[in-house]
Length: 291
Ligand SMILES: NC(=O)c1ccc[n+]([C@@H]2O[C@H](COP(=O)([O-])OP(=O)(O)OC[C@H]3O[C@@H](n4cnc5c(N)ncnc54)[C@H](O)[C@@H]3O)[C@@H](O)[C@H]2O)c1
Image 1: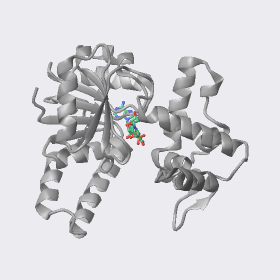
Image 2: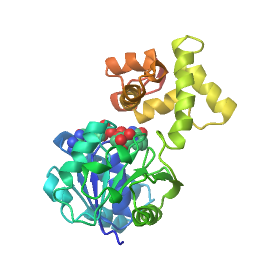
Image 3: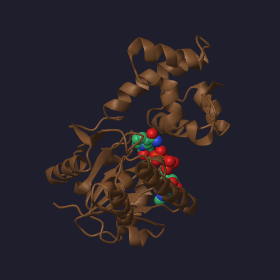
Image 4: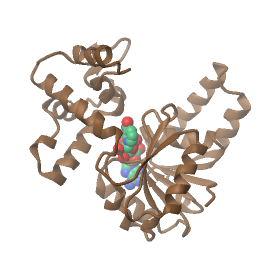
């Protein structure tokens, strides 16, 4: 199946950059959000990003202008759905929101539309029946920042057809990503299962006051050769996201070990979500400082 028109639902951290990457690689892209402030922020980010690439000599003016002309923002769900060959959802990792948003846009999309979820953890069989053709639903997991990170995980649920998987694998390569195929559904897929084990331990060490956030990150960077420590990375991906993910998991399993750690709960309650709010495990401004 040929993909020409891509709709990305959600103009947040992930959706905005996924939409930009697809537009850069030649697709006609609509980036939809119900929040107009988020649309404005995303439009400004795209504008500034393309301008700075040109200014730094990393992109030709013409390439930037063409990509921008292929990317439109909308707060109209019907407009977002009409003509979409591929819908990529990047709304918060809350099962009910995923179901609601996919069920709603399915009223306007053509019959052949493929639905790809950027969820970090939730397997698509939990929401595939929100649309009329569950065989067209797949997990398509990008990493943050989506314009930069190479890897995407494509997860085949029992409902997904081989054609759907092949089409999304090909699409991933066409937008210059490196896909890995996760052959069976598993909560958190591959990368986040490994990442969760590391962050869980880092938060435990912090909660127990075994070491400071800075020293935990330093130890992981220098001792394991990770480019970023786990707490720095949580600040980058969003403590709010981590909180919601862990709470959803806890709701599913009822296992207290799946609950967010004290540090995550505290930062979440204070609205300290990391880089996007200027404070998380660290403060962001002129210089990074342990909080
Ligand atoms: N942040 C990361 O590092 C990261 C990495 C990989 C995958 N993800 C996944 O990407 C998805 C989005 O995460 P994010 O960090 O971009 O979130 P975000 O909070 O930055 O953005 C979510 C956007 O969805 C919009 N939204 C909410 N409900 C909506 C609805 N019903 N219709 C349309 N738009 C709606 C919000 O207005 C917001 O703009 C999640 O599933 C998350 O697990 C996030």
